[in-house]
Amino acid sequence: MSQALQGLLDLLDLEQIEENIFRGQSRSAVVPRVFGGQVAAQAMVAAGRTVPADRLAHSLHAYFLRMGDPGAPIVYNVERLRDGRSFTTRRVVAVQHGKPIFTLSASFQTDEEGLDHQAPMPPSPDPATLPTSEDRLRSYGHLDPQVVERLLEAREAIDLRYVDEPPYGKFGDPREPHSQVWFRTNGKLADDPLLHVVLATYVSDMTLLDSVLLAHGRGGWAIGDVVGASLDHAMWFHRRFRADEWLLYDQESPSAHGGRGLGQARIYTQDGRLAVSVIQEGVVRVPW
Image (cartoon, rainbow, N blue to C red; front, side, top):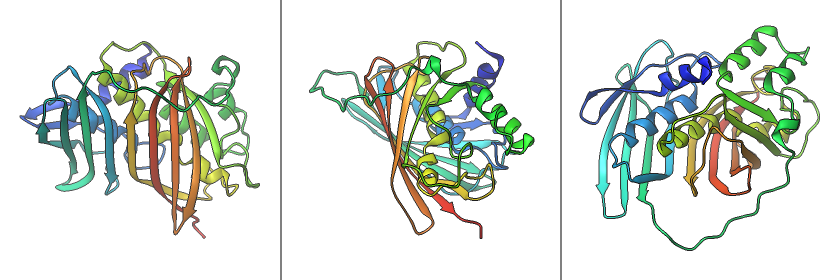
């Protein structure tokens, strides 16, 4: 396991300070606030620690309420809404400085057989043939070197590879609002299914709104032509997967309007199984 991945796992780990109450540390993202994927992932850790181990996460629905302060811990309060024969439901409120900054509802289910079909995996190149994040970022002479270093630091624990140029790599002309990214952790993980859900949740907030920017030829915060933040986030975990093995994040944007943009995506395993569906809406504002 890489040192960066171990650091991320330590960050996502939580201290239990009372029954149903957990505390997590935070750190700055590539912008001066707590990364939304970190808060969502920590909230899933908190919820999962109150659920029997034989129940697997199958969905989450979350709202980002306030910017997180990277200099202060985050307290996660878990409400046990329901413990049924097949399903368990939890609600988590993340609090900083006495105010809620994030809420999440998560549902867990016992493993069972049922009807089975899925949308086919779209074509995509082998991730091993694609440039690494570091190779791409260091080739962009138009980016501020400090921005490059912040992006590299934020993604050090994750091997994340764009199929095509990211918004900040090629901008100015509108492109199809569709983006593909392959990702996996930079190191092996334990077999705990919740851990792989938590890591996928963390990564899912990194690139989902890229497709909104592509439709308008915008490069995003990295070049300063867009101001953005996540508003809400939903995920459905259809099949078991491993976050330490290649996953294809196939993303598109059906709409942007009123200072908001919508991204929707599917995450596939390398052998073509549909593992996760994701939808997110975010603030996408032009600062002039």
